[in-house]
Length: 374
Image (cartoon, rainbow, N blue to C red):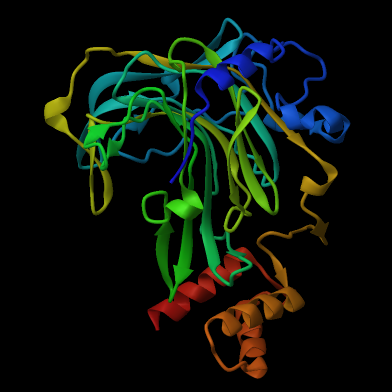
């Protein structure tokens, strides 16, 4: 587990940072290491928002997303005023399917996708602690997404948590819950092994996925700038312009959605084998409604961050025969299998159901599912 603790030094560095101007015509990333190459970064308007308009840009932000988790996302919990987007959580008993749930919250997700670049938001935490976690993150959606990683693994899901604030997760070493000043900057992925999905998460793979930063300030009290750079080789996290964590980029190459959300946490949820579940006996209206606030979201890319496209195909998920063969050969070599080119070529032909010489993400997903059933 990587911890970054820069108490007095960090406070001093933050004091030297420029004041963020959310109305700047040509903002640059708030990162000390981009000062010399700021001209290489171009703001991507379709993923950026200053939240200065009178209402939410519904063409950019989906605030009525599909529910998941032991709480529900409701559009009335997302608002925009005073130059910020506000996502609130309320205590509200309701039914979802056969479940009784006790809280609703807000999510704003950009339904366009992006993979590489620098992603930054200026966020103020929520007043309720513990119980709610303000988050700025990116995640892939859809079973058609597949990526063959350099180590031969087939990746079916990519998630980069720029921040999850105020989580109050359980610390098995100290036997207490982490304090409000712990900021989590983690990764999640799903791999396909023998036709089955296998999670790669912070607790199971800390060397690959887990980071945190111990702040010297309370994230509930003021806005701070949180960012991450996702490149083909590295994922690097920043807080108030200072690098706080980095990981090699193994599995985070799928198209992802830039997302803001306020998630339910301890003591109102617990974990079992299926994931988070509600804890009805802990339900309370005390401290609710509570809301996180976001002053802006800004996304930049360099020329090398823009994924190349050929014949309108998505290079990350749609593979030509040459790409398919190369990735399969790497996988066979990793697993110690005797290479059988004729078999793999036959597999490609079977995968390519529309005969366009492309093994698309969707076609591979269908083929893997059919193989698993056999």
